Length: 283
Image 1 (cartoon, rainbow, N blue to C red):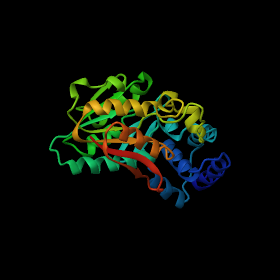
Image 2 (image 1 turned 180 degrees about the vertical axis):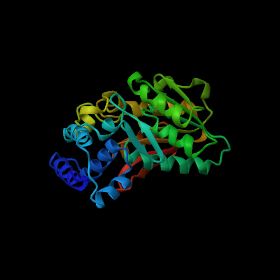
Image 3 (image 1 turned 90 degrees about the horizontal axis):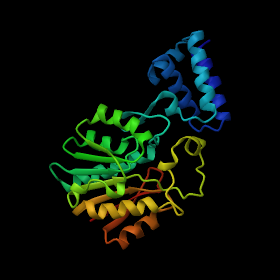
Image 4 (image 1 turned 60 degrees about the vertical axis):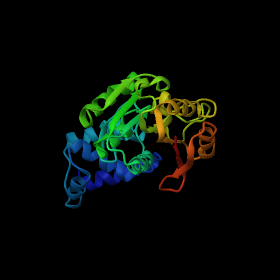
């Protein structure tokens, strides 16, 4: 069978299943099966390349699972995030593109501080996407990260070993993390669970496959945000920065939490679609 024909049929299948990124997912998944980059795959498709019966069978088995809304990243075992290719799977939150914008803002804030060897803390690190991006893109930073879930840490430990073995990763409750750093942290960042308990996420990939521990944050969704605020007040030095990701409808609430806790210069950062996505504050 021609690669181009198989891709076209799969894109149609994925589209009917409600997958918004049907074309990209089909190409990435087939490239994964064939051991090709997306560009290499498309080059073969354009030149009427064919696929073997065995490879087609392997691909179609995975395509059925993707059409049932199993996350693409669980099928490939990889998630792209900024310059990283992270190891992920069932039990760890799959990092989202929106969080890349949060990291971009955090890097800008950290550079504006102009500290030679900044201390950075990531609370509820999940796969390590945020912490490792900061470690890789600001090599002088001393990065510390905490994650509660043992299921998630199966992947996190591998990602830290791959990208920043010198960074500190611990298992524990973010509310008590790193007491030795109290009053010393230049930047604290977190993408905490922030979905209200009774809310069902729109995408099946999220509510069926992402770990609940990484999603839900209490009745109003902000219980863990409040814990991050409390711990950040103890960890962040005067003049240091706090960056918290939140849902696009929670900006005013998160700002108020931080204002009530005497953070200064509290403001909202937006994602590429112009939606409120993070709050930035100064200690």
